[in-house]
Length: 311
Image (cartoon, rainbow, N blue to C red; front, side, top):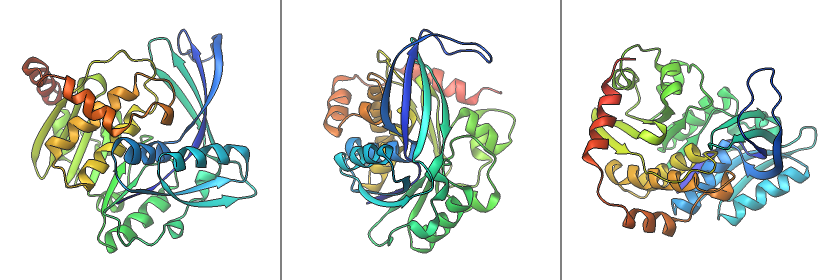
């Protein structure tokens, strides 16, 4: 079973021809709302696409936003351990999605800043604790300590990007980052592989967008090329990857088997709008993989070259 401790936000999404530059106004189209937040997205992905028994510790306001956020999580089968606060609103995010499926996101964290390590449920029966950085860093560190003491594997998606104290990295068994986050944490010049090797975590996974992902586990490298899809909205794709990867590992699948399943789920997420609303079911991911041929050697070689290239 997997426990997520993290954020939940109601996303306000507007589509536009392109994302505005600083100081620029761009006319958008319809405004829609979707349940989101890195923690909640990963919890839904873990339960729905990953097929894992999933719990989530989160903090919400007592408002209409909270009702939508709780309903989405519960509909995915996530067991909630929610704290409600009267004096602060639930988290929100404002997202502009361009016609080429890129996005720009601003988050108003609200109640997410109130989540504490003391809000975690009893840890008996959980195998993994997965966290992100949309909750206080002090909460992340103390929660990691509690999880380690209880024998759980600690996974951290270090997003949004920021430098991390050595005391936290020492508590993390599995670190998931994109390329920018990897540079912010490692402070290492050179290749992606050099930056990964500089981190003390047993396992480091780096997502590389459409190129795919690379994992370094106990010094061994595993490459996963990206799946080509017709992208509509990339919001939530990274969170889907994280939640599904942890679900697969918690179920006992080795990294070479977990990576393609997580990557396929993330690719499918890009084919629909919204964050949680676009996360596929496990059966859809299995069907998608069954229709795909073996990995392209040329794409594999290009991914390896990219990871080995000097920055």
